[in-house]
Image 1 (cartoon, rainbow, N blue to C red):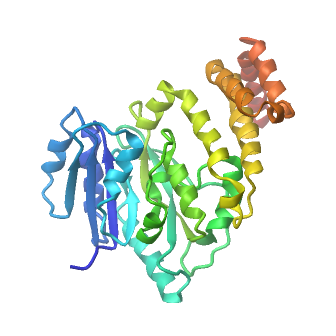
Image 2 (image 1 turned 180 degrees about the vertical axis):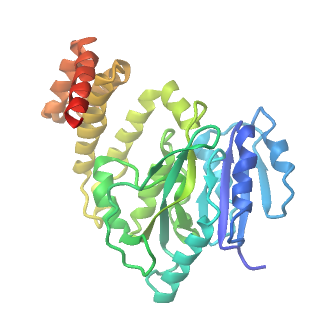
Length: 348
C-alpha cells in the first residue's frame, strides 16, 4: 500500500475533554490522504476511551505504560509515522477543514517546479486563537521573518530558505513558526533524528532549529489553517508556572549546543546566540516581567545570566536597568501602569 501523504501525530496527556474534537477536525479534512497516530502518555482520565470510540481505520493509538515526559512523547507519536510529511498536532488544538488541502497544493506546486530535493520542505501557516470553548479570540501570523514577497503562484504564500529564517530568528533565540502548523517532510525528520532532546519547555523550537540547519525550502501560508486553544490547563503554561527556570536554562543550552562548527554555513555565529540569550531572554524579556510585577522570574533571569556569562552580561545596559527595577520593589509596576495609561491617552 502506498504511504499516505500526511501523518498527523498527536501527543496526548489527560486531554479527554479535547482529544475527540481534535481528531474529528482531522477526519473532517477536505483532503483525505492521511493517517492519525495518537501517543497517549499514561493519561489518568478517559482519553484512551474517547479515542477508541472513534471508529476509523486510519487511527492508531500508542499507549505508554508510564509517563515518559512531553518531549519524548513527541517522538513516540511520530516514530511510527509512515507518511511523506509529518504534522505534530497538540491534542487540544484543531485543524481548519482546508488545512491539508492547502498544504498538499503547496507540496504539489514545489514538486512541479522542482524547487526541492528529496522533499526537503517545511510548511507553516498563520493560526487562529480560540478559548477553552472553541470561541475565536484572535489570530497570529508567523514570526517576523515573514515578508510580502511570494515566489509561488498561490495567493498569500511566500517561500524562503531555511537559512533566511534562522538568520532572522535564531540570533534572538525565538521560535521559527507556530508549532501546531509546522509540516515537515519525512526526509528532514529522519535526518535530524526526530525530536530527541534534553529541552523540556520548548522542544519544538530545538527541533525546528535542527531542521532549518539543513537549509530546506520553507513555505508560509498567511491564511489561518490551524486553531490554537488557550486555556488554564495548557501543558506548556503549566510547565512554565511550575518550572520557570527551565525556560532560561533551555535557552542557555542553545548557546552551547549550536557551536560555530554547526552554524558555519547559515551565517550565524555562536557568539550571536550568547548575545541573544543575554540581551533578549535575560534582558528585555526579564525587564518586561519586572514591569509586570513578576519579580520572581525576573530575578531568576538576572541570576542565571550572572552565573553563565557574567562578563558579557554586565556590559549590557539591560542588566543594570533590570537590577534597578528589581531593587525598586513595587515602584516599577506602578510606574509601568502609569506609563501605559499615559500612552493610551495620547492615542485617544
